Length: 107
Picture 1: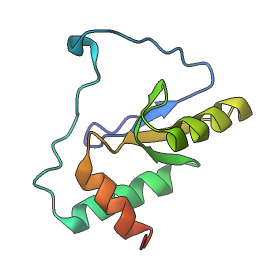
Picture 2: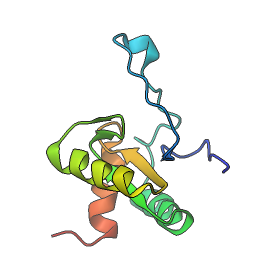
Picture 3: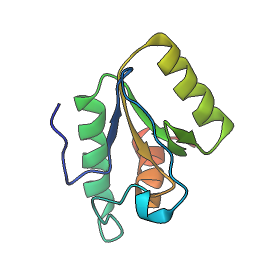
Picture 4: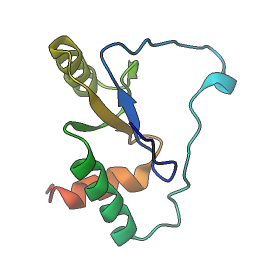
């Protein structure tokens, strides 16, 4: 699978091993600054994520360290089913978090 360096997306496969680190130097780095993007750019990026991935998860945290109960439950279900999925940590990208609400017409 090719990774788009312009996008904050990450991929999980059932064989992927998770490693945790205690220092910020080992934390994932943002690949794209979205703060100056307009709504239409964000919505186009989200549309691209959804169209390019069979399962696309916008979550709080990442699959190895979910930051809320709902995200943890969804990741556990997907991993138990052994499916590949892509994810974006919306806590790192507030513009994407708001964009997902607009894209899905969340009230």
